[in-house]
Length: 435
Image 1 (cartoon, helix red, strand yellow):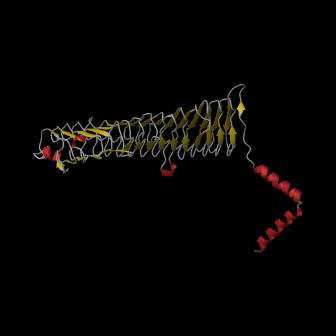
Image 2 (image 1 turned 180 degrees about the vertical axis):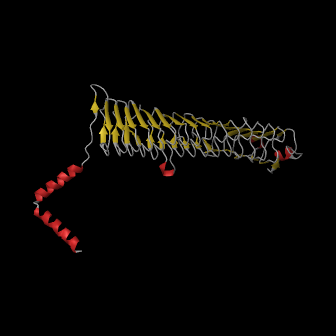
Image 3 (image 1 turned 60 degrees about the vertical axis):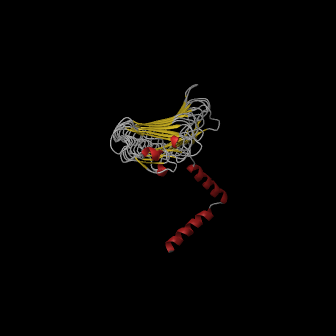
């Protein structure tokens, strides 16, 4: 206690001994010593500007590029550009190069209205928490972001430009991140967004917003798009297409355009789309193509709104055995839904459910065992809305159907049809039918 008291008394003595004016000057000099001094851009004669940030020189800086010249910022050391704010030129190209771990952590880049905006993140967590924004007058900008280092863009937040291209490329684990760590990309009006995830875990858990002008997603690599969410804006009229190769899209969530835009999900290989959920929009075409054995195992295809819809939803399982094992197709009001299981054992243990006001529900089971152990729920309001074809050998063995359905087209084999099937299909009071 006596030692602490001595320190306090000594401090008070020196402070009280210094005139008030001198004390204020001392405090001012101390503050200036701690102020951020940011390096300036270097300019070529009538040409682009550039800045290379090393050490901690650019940390917490606010850097504004010349309004009419191309501008390149390179962050070459760990944390070199921590929390940097970069304001791009209004009429020139703008590039941010992050070439070391955490080099651009927490950076905010304000892309401009003319020219292109390029962000390149090459190392582990090099762009962790990056925020890409558009200046308020942005109308003609193209944006390209490359996340090639492991988790180089995780916790990022990217706003795509209006009326132009937005290209996001992710290397191995480049855009990987779980829950609150995931990369978020937001599409905008009339823009075309492209997401390339062609490496292991490249885009796991990504939250990717489609542009109104169209969306193209490419997934190729183990878990490349695992548990990713791809979603369209509610007014999107452009197409959405998602390609899944290898075991790239387990637990994928695809929310298709709501108004008019077509939606195609291609599942090329075994386990490509295992347990994926595809939500079709209210209008337009929605197609899921299952091109290999177990390529669509436990896939669910449904609709965002089960009322007042239109258009056609198709689930194509005709390419291989067990292409759509354990799958579920739900047909909403006003929709026409067609499930093609015209390959042996294409759709075993699957479900096909239609709401009462669906326009038409049709399932084609035209090969041996193609719809084994299926549960089919037809509309209860009118039999012409539900059409089931069981023309293959034991095509619908051990299955059941409820609701009003057309007379089932039957093929060879036991338990495909029975003597009461046609009468039950046309019954006034819907009752279960054993197929």
